[in-house]
Structures are given as structure tokens and as C-alpha cells.
Image (cartoon, rainbow, N blue to C red; front, side):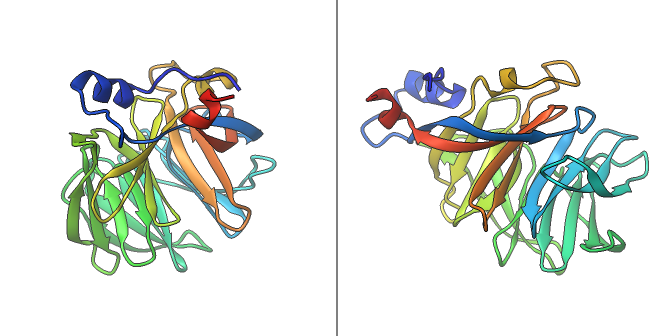
Length: 262
């Protein structure tokens, strides 16, 4: 396993003098499996639930909600959104699925089995990423803030700023809730932040530098960026992908200190 270059936030912390003995841990990765992914899918929301992959794809005129067989990449069920909606993050809450839109201020609530729209909700800001912690929905809007939301009426219950050693982490994008932490893609970077949902403190930085070079892209590098975190709790599999990527990667994390000692 080759050492990867230091992530952008890591370098910024170093230059600002914020890194010290208690600095944020950095993780490298190892690819352990790969699965097919459509190079036409502009991945905005990504999750694994009850044996299937669920994906929300964006872009006006191309936005959709999909249930996918992970092994084959076959789309088992699809709901296409009207052309004037740009779909974003998704989260499953019991037998319902919530899907954000980017700037349309609309949140769709679906029946998980049929993809029938049960309700819509108003959200005043932009929608980027969405996750479910068992009690509240967690929403990102491209800023350094996470919003915690009541799924019954989509009211914001609290907000927390995400900080890495005191430095705000902007461009928080696709979200996943894993073992008590919020994991967040940082848009236009190769980094995933591990975040304490109570304090907003970044507890780890996952550096996926070089992963894009392991796949084929269906678009330009500037738009075909890392975005998509799915956690298979039963199989304990961590899956990541990107917009317009030809692959979904199952990866294992390697603490950078442990790798450096090898």
C-alpha cells in the first residue's frame, strides 16, 4: 500500500499551525472489492439498506431515485424527477425515504417499497447531503454547518458547525451516519470527514487521494468528483464512489501512522 499525499485540509491545518500532538487522525485506504456503477449517474445521495443500494442522481432533466443491485449494477427500480428538479441527498427513515433537492426548496418523502410520493416538505436553504441517526435527519447545505431535522415536519431542531482543530470545514456534501459519527464528503476534494454529531468536531480525515485514478470517468475530471458513502451495517462494508464513476469501491481504512511504520 503506497502512502497517499496529504489531504487538502491536513495541509491547511499544518500551514495554519493548528496541527499538534492531538491533531486530527488521518486515514489511508485499501481497495478490497469493486462493483459496477453507471458512468451516467451524477451521484448526489448514496446508501445501503436491506441488501440493496439506493442512489439519488442529480442534474436538471436527469435527476432520479434508484434501487440498485450492488453486485451487478442493475437498476431494479427507478423514479425520475420532473426536469425542473435537481435531486440531492437521501436518507431512509423506517419505511420511508427522504430526498432533497438542490435549490428548489422541496424535500420529497417516498414510500420505500413503491417509490410513491407520500408527502413533500419545504426547506428554506439549499439541500446537499442527508443522513438519519435514528432520531433526526442530518442535512448539509455546502457550508460548514450540519442541521438536525425532525422528519415529521422537517423543522430544524439544532445546528452545529463542523471544525477540524478550530478550522471550519466548508463544502460538506454527501452524508452517512456510521456507528455514532457523521461521515461527510467534502465537495471538490478527495477527503471524507468523520464528525462528532454533538460537538461538530472532526475526529478523523479519510484521504482518498488517487482513488479516482482507479476508475473510468463518464465526464470531465472537474465534475466527476468523489461523492458517495454507503455503509452496509450487516456486512460491515464501507462503499464509496463518485459522480459519473464506473466503479463503486469497497475500502478498508488504514491509520496513516500504522502505514508509515511499515
